[in-house]
Structures are given as C-alpha cells and as structure tokens.
Image (tube, rainbow, N blue to C red):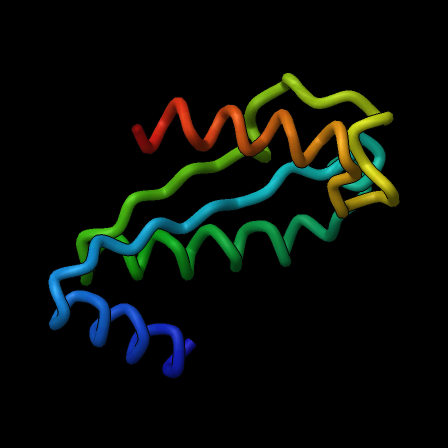
Length: 93
C-alpha cells in the first residue's frame, strides 16, 4: 500500500492523472471470492481516492463479458482483451 501511494504521489507531481482499472473476472470467480478480500480491496481504493485525484474504471461490475472471454477464472483471453480494449477506449477517449 505504501509503495502504491508513493507511486500515485509521483504521478501527481508529474501532472499525470492515474487511472486504476479493475479487470473483470468470471461469474464463478466473483461468486466464490473471499468477501473480506473484496471489502479490503475496495477500502484501499476508497482511501486512495480520498487522498489523490485518480480515475477508477471498475469492470468487475459490468456484465458484458462471457465465460469464453477468459482463458481461466480471472485472466482475459483474446476475445475478452478485444472487448476490454474497446471499452477502455470509449471511456478514456
């Protein structure tokens, strides 16, 4: 967490707006992920957003990905990579 905060601070000093991207996972992964882990993750993100101007793009809450878009439970395959690139371009451009 400390290293990440230092990195965000460095980017801020250089005038670069950080973008945090939360990538999607399969429905199976999302269903069985430890809830404490998920809560702690979003608490850290919220703490960062309170201290710094960062943009959060959270694909874990967007239901446009199919099981075939992944090569395993939480890594994008080729079709998923194409979809997520398209979505990122729409948001960032």
